[in-house]
Image (cartoon, rainbow, N blue to C red):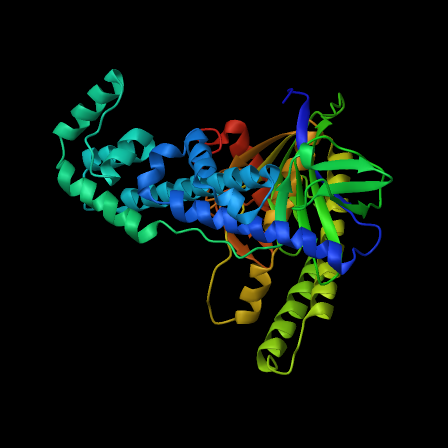
Length: 441
């Protein structure tokens, strides 16, 4: 992708309800797409297929030779997309498994530093990782092989290899999907015309026509999301948009992200002050509806109204978030934005109502949209670690006290609103106020 372009997702929708007969043809493709993905998960998701995952053409050739496509009668344009879609999921799952094991290794106090180094080496070098899991000799390139032998001399390789295999068995998740309402589609399988889109189906030389609400036409891989209960579809399109550059965007802004006020800057400017009201309304409604559904599940035949209102509340919340993010960029004109890494919600606790509200916090959506909008406007984002960031004084760095939303420093006497003090600390650390850029002092 050119450096002055970034990718964003746009959506297209059907203008008229799709007839049941034509919707069923699309559902047949989605069902076969699901079957292909599950087939790939089972056949290539284990340790025996690790050597086939990169670059993936071995998997493609074996799937072609299996004859599974002919058994399903699925067009090749869908079959191979499903194969590589599943292959990407398998790669991502292995990455997640390795990341989890690295954390376990780092926390394990029974290992020496050399033993931890050896295990991290195996997790990082794919060929060594695959060889150990499959009980094969480790064969690498000359330079890396020498490094492996030096590490192996200092540890008990048999014990550590058994540990790695044991952790893989415990932590690696076998993939499976039940989603039969989504599939990808290449440019060869669709055609824009007549204010709509023609989509290939399992019948030869026949297509389903879907009138669209817009006249935009694209030439790229699309993703179809089906809603058979509502006789509608949603088309997700990745497009490259031009990055905007602003000469007047020169300020550096530290941000404190909150649950009730979306963002507070280091100068005390607030954006999204109504977020708490929207958030509480949304989370409380979800909580009440969930409890009601559990009590009356047998007498409740469907949840059509529930999903419709849930979607309206989410759209209202997301619209407000985007509106405030746009106002933030327009008013602050930042060149660099410093933001603390957002925390994960705490599970459990005595106050389930509060925990439910925090669990519904749109922190992920806020982060994603802020990242996207900053990229579109050529604004740099610097993330800093948040340990004790709200307890430190932004003037002298001492640990202060907080009471009723105010921060006080017992050393220098500095007093400030808690969120403003936090935002100033974020900016200070991001600018290199700590020992290292982005790290606490």
